[in-house]
Length: 115
Length: 109
Image 1 (cartoon, rainbow over the protein chains, first blue to last red):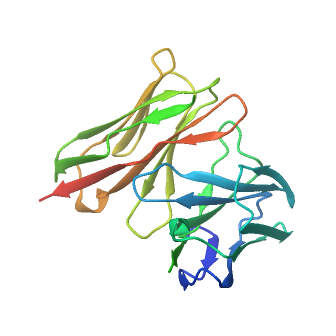
Image 2: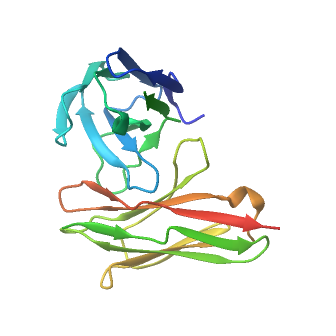
């Protein structure tokens, strides 16, 4: 139990579906992140929220849409995805935006398969 | 460009010692993290180094050489439960985490 909970753990969706991934952190942190993890590739940072404000959007396609209603919850809305979007999506949080020594805590991830 | 290199896979024997290397090239440097990730689970924090030298935490130690852009994670008295992927990540001058692809460590009896 890392204090970061993600649902669903597994999701299979068609290319025309709309679904959402949910993340909740119970650590009182101010920063939350979405990462994409594909096999044998480095973690890709998708979105960063610091104090509920989005601070990073690393050229992520618009078919991924984040939402951060408060500092404890983060969503990733998915729409018209492609098969290459199949991956593990990790949510993470840290006390503040990562700086020297600030540790990131990860959730266990949502396995997404696009068919 | 910014880059992290670490071996894709390593195999070691239970009870032995293994060293997982990581080299980094980043725009500026504000420290290096090691994370452990068991299959199907969340990555969990192992260590953070920002100064040169070796830091020991029980069976795990992490070393950093800033001048060489090099770090290693040393695992002693290996146990079967140490079978996992080990992720190296460097913090650049903009406090962006640059991640390696991870090293899958297989422990054999």
